[in-house]
Image (cartoon, rainbow, N blue to C red; front, top):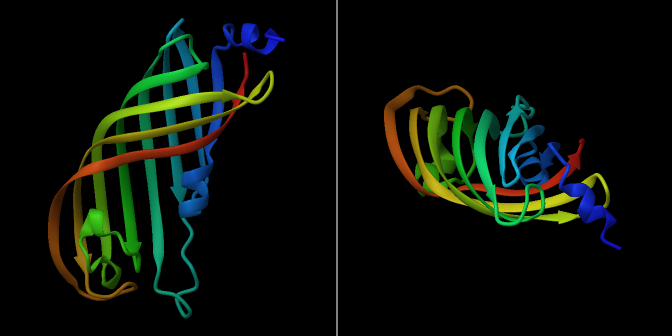
Length: 183
């Protein structure tokens, strides 16, 4: 009955994809997590969205890359149950036609933003076993991100209005990940 749980103690490497991030932003993403100690792991992950819709039918774009590194402390054993984490992140983006009031203000859908961000935060999550190698993981994080960007009048071309900086405090991570445990 507990054979799957006893095997999880030997797990040292996991490969994962954040389904929530991937579906919500239509961004291919991949992560790898290594066991460092009986209760510690290090996760490195990232996503890259190079897709630009047909500009004749849409002025929206969400071209970006995002990378995240997170140290996790597991309350029982690694890859099993509850964990707490501390993460850092970096991103570069070219976003237009999206309503992102927390990041760029209430009128954000009317402009294009091209720039970068860096920050970090804390997170909490839980790992659910599906079988010997497959699992689901849910996590949420909050923290700080410093954004630096150029703001443009129109979504596709337009003239540059300003260069701005913004300090963001709030959610920095949301994940529902499909996980494959290798070792």
